[in-house]
Image (tube, rainbow over the protein chains, first blue to last red):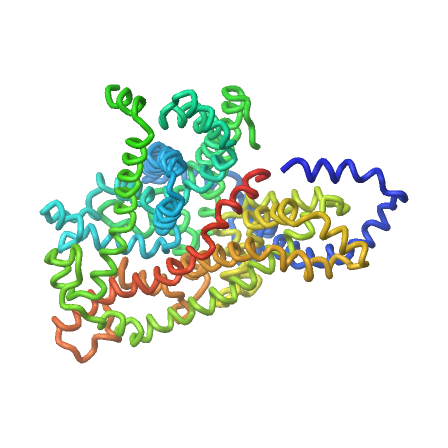
Length: 314
Length: 296
């Protein structure tokens, strides 16, 4: 990866006439033209909403707009912190994300280590194809499957265990359903990044280890795992920094009146307050609270990783 | 501990067998639920719910699929999804390409600042409501473009494509073009686009999957007759609204039977197009992620 860039850098000084900045800008005018539409769209739909976050501190009225509405300071945040379900939502959000991370994170790594050792190329392709499949299915279909499979009236799971439990109404079952289906859908896809990393291992290393009499599991431990460590840490940092943003869509689709004790999370509340009840400022404040915690987590985890493993990605 | 000791001493042949069995089991766990839905979609629902269709269909029927495409709501949703997927993919891939190409030119004056400008949007956003309000104020409510524009430029994809341009297109090609007097745009159209077909295929698939499966954006911004297929499915699978428009004039038992069949058939209709497509570009996924990950 490095060589072409280095070569390019080395080649630069050879140019006979150094061009002025103005000349270089003029020379590249077509590139700037290409960028106009992406930049305009990004400003309108990404940067203006960022600026609009300030309605979290205002009493937003549509007629007055983002900046004309009355300033109310921390009012919406206080209202959120004193909401009757505040504690439940925080606990549910943190627990759901944390358990999800603990259970889901190691699976793609283990799968990738196993797939990487498969020696029959065609079989390996088949395994990968099958494992990627659920990633391409809409979350709507996945949740439909979950609901049908868990139905007390002839759902697959109840048929297999010979019972008639209505799992969707059991609060204790919600997290298991959420996490297990998440692993089913995304663990296979998650192997790609690790398999790509492992494909960079010099095959000579394996040969040398084999000659030394190392078994497959020793080769995984000594060669593969050390190769993966930086990528594992990077992935971990990214997962932890998103800890407060649970997969809203799935929770939304799997929530029932009866499992709310565990499925009531902040993201769903943001949606209900904002889109359903039109409490724009309140909803924005809650969303901002969520984002700030994510950023703090990102910074903290990045610092820890820097100290512990001398790697940093942010 | 004992098991570990055993594994460690294993010969390569034994560990190969263990691996194949293990991966076969995992494939079974992944594939079986999909297979079960497929079988159920062509079986009598009463047999499905009686547990008679674990392996093979029972009382084979295609009525479920017929019902999916004769129900006006579902058909309308399906056609909407096709439209959104085609237009959205054209839009998204074009945007990714016209952003990635200038960003791949390291000597472009202002390159660093333009990069930062775009990359910030990967980490920060306005959140649900401020974005919603901007979409509303720009007049996009109940407009198909509300599905595409608020996403901005898909920066994850831009980085993958940019790195592909930097690393996988031979430098000589650019130099030769420059010597021939080709300007930037000509180089882009004549060299970069044709030489990046593999990564373009990946981008097309990624975008198609994203738009085909999207429903939340449509729920927020569009009205009922504009709903894409997955959002129509929500009524059938999640909130279980009665499907009156399809079952009028049938006996209660018969309309129930069709309604259950439609659940399975519509899930297959929603999942099949993407499942059929992705294996064709699968070999490029790793490559794409590799070049994307190096300088993410």
